[in-house]
Image (cartoon, rainbow, N blue to C red):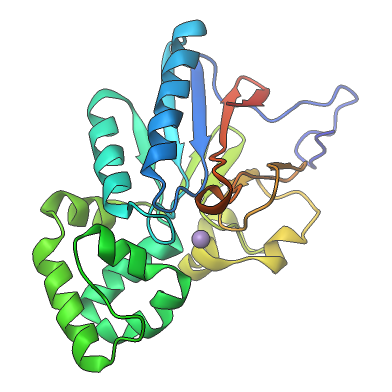
Length: 247
Ligand SMILES: [Mn+2]
């Protein structure tokens, strides 16, 4: 049951998005271009079965790393935007890629959470434990190889998106801080402090970042990272009026 200090009537009002709009929100893709292709088909079938004035496809970040085809995921998201209204948010993994180009030494840390498959997807051949010389060479090679469209895509990703009673973000928000004054680091990386918080936020937070077996629908947040890269399950939440469902 939805409970919020904003809605204290006897007749509880459920969180909603504006009329005539359907949101499709998708969690962490992590290099699974194959699953993203299937997801686009599912969304297109749903749109055909249930036409709507306006649909917006929101992606919650972490497009790259871990899975086999990070470059392919970015290609598909960029192409999808040519025919559909999409909104891609920034994940902590995208931050790492951009930072690596400026500071190759972060590969030591980034490699521990899936960087090598991303480098492979751009045609690079990284060693398991690249030393400083190789780190610099890899960053230089990636700079030359990565398409300009990917760089632009990565540079332009916003951190959050608000629609109706919902706030979309990669990782979550810091409890106690207004949504308008969150730190980037929390929006991209937060886990326990956010996940354990049971009181209402200003909006219902739709997030990824922390994988769970099934989507978590709570009164104050909806978590939709179902660990696609390992489970093969890429979750898409739809919101329309005050209804929600999954594709
Ligand atoms: Mn993440």
